[in-house]
Length: 217
Image (cartoon, rainbow, N blue to C red; front, side, top):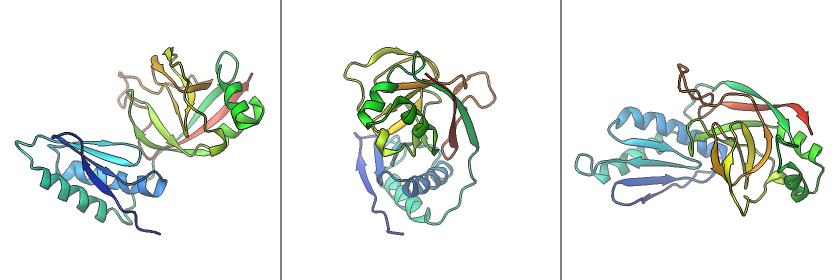
C-alpha cells in the first residue's frame, strides 16, 4: 500500500485541518485517528469529514503545536489499526416519479434509462465515511462514477425527509426537511434521525448501507 502524505493546515486561529485525500483506505485510518484523539485530547473538538479531520481548540488552554503533534502521531499510529466493523443497514427505496423527481435527469446524464440508473444505484454496498450537514446525514462512499451528476443550479428550498439524493460523486439521504441542491432520485421510509431514540442517528462512520429497491416509477 502506498503511503498517504497528509497535510495539516490552519483554519483560522482556533482550528487545524488534517487532509489526507478521499479514498476508503485513508478514511479508515482517519476513523482510527479520530477515535484515538478523542481519548487523548478530549478538550479538543474533533470533527470527522470526507478525507479530513478538523480540530477545534481553545488556544488559551491548548497550544496549536500540541494539536499538530497529536494529529501527526495519531495519523502515523493509525497504520494497520483494525476497528470493529460497523453495522449493515438495509434501506428500502422507491425510485423515480414523485419519490425521485430527478432520477430521469441523472439517468440522461449517465446515458441510461431511469430503471438502469436506479438498479445501478442500488447495486453496491456503501460505506458511511462521516456524518455532517444535518444531524444523522451520512456521506456515503461507493457511488458508481457513472451516476455522478452535478448539483442543481437552483437548489430546492425544502427537500423532504427521507429523500435519497446524488450530489456530484456522492450519495446520501436527507434525515429531515432541509434546503438542498442534490438531485433527488428516490425516497425511503427509514428514519435516519430520531432525537428520542437511545442512539438518535441510524448510521455511524464505518457502517455499511445497502439500498433495497421497493419500486421504480
